[in-house]
Length: 263
Image 1: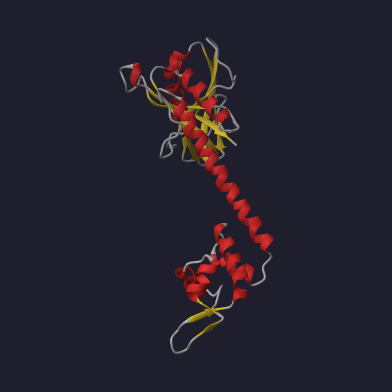
Image 2: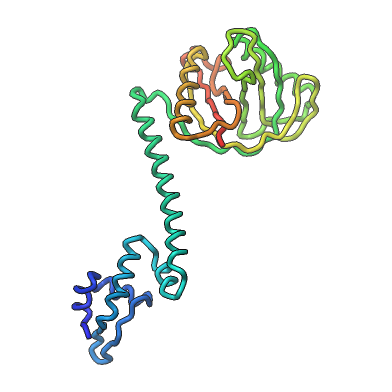
């Protein structure tokens, strides 16, 4: 029989750990002196101590070890642990990839975040504009027309409004654009305005500060970011106009959010 100190040396488990495993019921002393309280172990228990030590080095929980000792298939528990560690590794790899991407951007001009856009009711209108500069005159006219058709309609809170470019390419003129705005209820449409449910979306988000003629830099950045971090686009990019000609005198103060839907 071995005293707890002797067993501790042979098993490479601290006395504190042995007392803990005793309380948890996974490694009990072979006997305890009722007068002194001394705990004694048998050499045959060293094998069990080694297994417990090995399981703890794999970061198995006490409950998982207890389940193994109770007869649960160790392969099943280790398989579940491997799956959890793989998922954790993937999350760590993803964060490292993002950090490295940011560090490669010497100016750190842009910061990409991931957002979840909930399901919304929106009204939409599509047209072809001669120049990009016509956008800010066209959007208010769409809102006015929608309000005439639906006097009681209200914009959603928080507001959500964005434009898409269905052609999927940059064009100097004859730009096809679709305007979308979230509202509280479905309304009545016409040949120009329609209502629909916008399904929830996971998006990458980036903010561009400055005039629209330099927004291509932001698009290039977010697309490169998506590619390098293994995000797969799942729809047209969305332009959300936060600040613009209507409230900022200088184009340098204009703020536009670009959202890229992803799978």
